[in-house]
Image (cartoon, rainbow over the protein chains, first blue to last red):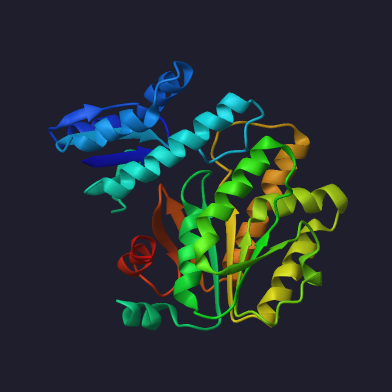
Length: 105
Length: 194
């Protein structure tokens, strides 16, 4: 599994496609849906971890002031922790800025 | 591997700044770093006041994370210059962003106060690890007071980075060395080895 993070609109998806594997894009949006619909996130994440030939793309969302809205704080927390778990299990991790990918792992 | 780490980091007199986003894994990384720096007495300085459910949740989480790592804990929300810590050889300060908010609430001399506090630690203990936040790229323009806070945190991070021997950015749990005579492999192994 390859994990790609970075800010929005940085070229993460285009970079993800270059691997020629299945791409799970905008994981942060999926996480938002899971939170809104009370879906068990651990199960969903484990399902992602069970796939081998896959590229997962997730926005980095934690680089700001702590939001006033509680649901936004939870969202930020869950996206960050999920990214840590995926990065730990990934065979490669990239961060994309200005369409330039840096391999972190 | 440990010997290599010792060579790279040295065991004494290291000032390390760890920065990262919220929920990036920077705390866990910094704690493990302290275990590698020293087998001696370690002091964890907590700057977050336990007000509100969120703060309590975060504090509980951090307590569980470091439970088995042998830190003494000191809750100190402002005026770090008052801390006496000569009994320790490693201090881990968590974190600069809450300390700054607390200091700004009580004094206009917050920057001076904070840097003096850090210098006070450096004089007392060989190893100092400070955790700070990256809050600078959410693209939001805040009202004046919050912008002043963001700017002050940026300036403090810069000052700390200049003083530090090693600066590490943690991105989704992965350490990236921004400054210091270490490399990717060594810094990375600390996270996964402990």
